[in-house]
Length: 84
Image (cartoon, rainbow, N blue to C red; front, side, top):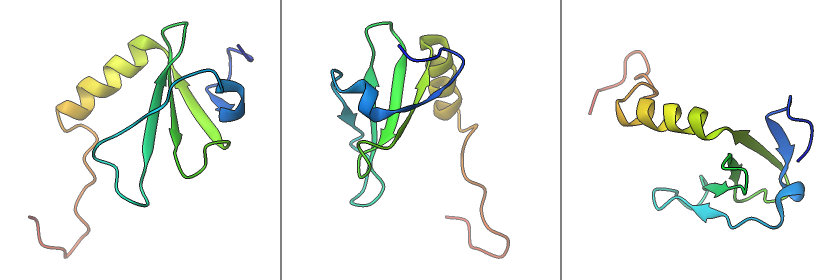
C-alpha cells in the first residue's frame, strides 16, 4: 500500500476492493466503505470514485462506529433552529 503515514489516498489506488454504499445515503450524499485485505477500512464519496479515500485501521474504524452509535458525532443544532 502507499505511504502508511498518510490516511488520505487516491481511490484510484484501491481499484481491487469492493465498495459498499450506505443504505442511509441520499441522492447527493453517498458514502461508500471498503474493507481492505489488510483489515483497514477505506471511505470515499461515491460521486467522486477516483477522488480521495480516507483509510482507517480496524481499531480506528471500530472506535468511530462506537462513537457514532453513541451520538458523539451528532451535528449540533444551529442557533435559533427548532430541535426535532
